[in-house]
Length: 447
Figure 1 (cartoon, rainbow, N blue to C red):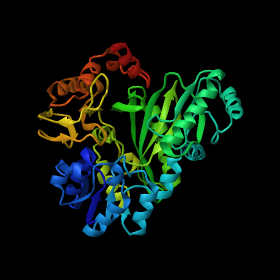
Figure 2 (cartoon, one colour):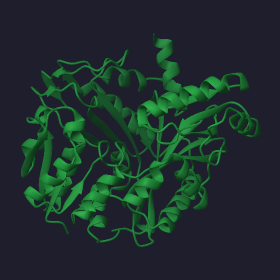
Figure 3 (cartoon, rainbow, N blue to C red):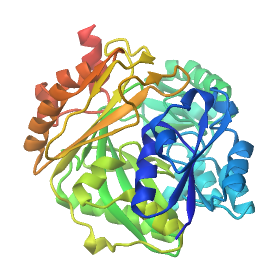
């Protein structure tokens, strides 16, 4: 087991990893920018190192500073959390060159799954169902028209190196295709420095289903069930559930088994999430995230397994602590992402939190790194906390969530709490009857 882990992140995920380390008796080091000097994870860590000014590129994305912090403090492993450098293959390679363990997959696996085209090819080879579309990058309009005609309109054009909805355009007819192709390539080049794009069939009313997987790096793989992340705004997840209200036990077992076998065959090490669009009983691979997800707590709630403990165990060479038959699903869990944003316009709302009170009681968990008097800096993601609620079934979970949202108080800034209070009372949400377009349509009607 590791002696000292450096946590290369900030906010609630840094605090989440820090807690896991303390439970395992591992010393902790956190890095921080000057803007985060008063952050909760900095206060609670055994050691802290300031690595630069507020901009991420000069601090949390500064690989050389982070490696230097490891060498100064004697950290023998790095947990990247999510975001920032968590899916940076170069970072994983550099740590390995310095004999520091990256708590995650190999640089090669990050590279394969970070390239959307290569990831799709790999998924297909591993037996994972994929969305019909191009086999590689599409550069010519003539080729794009041929592929679109074969798979049928509407189609979606996606950036190969993309994420977060950038470099994605829908063409509903051949007349739309030229502009969509040019726009997607332009956005992809500006956002990612790579204008390669590919084409897929655009599904009309799919759900977003993701499967939590783990590999030990030696040919063993397991799955921890699925999460439903269909409530999204601009391709950003807002509300997540485990298990999905759209799947039955047979479908859950089938897709979970496919993913676990694929991870084993790949020789993958650590946590990963295989994401699908799901429509009319069929699953279609869209991407794999080679890291811990923001929404991992709902999986922990229904399995009773600490996924960060599992990450650390696998990275240290201890292998998986559970076999597939040991993983049982208990009840239902929902996570709401609480952002420092206007609940209607979603404009960021940095500032000082004057009062912060979290709900409590059976089945309630709040992951947050903020506190009363904390000043939210304007430089980073607006997520300030996650409310996770667990119940014996979905009905009980929804009732408990309604009560927890009423208890949650954040004063001094605007947050998305009012949005969730609206959603929890909506009949479609109560019935689990929604798809990836539902929330944006709901918000458009509210304007």
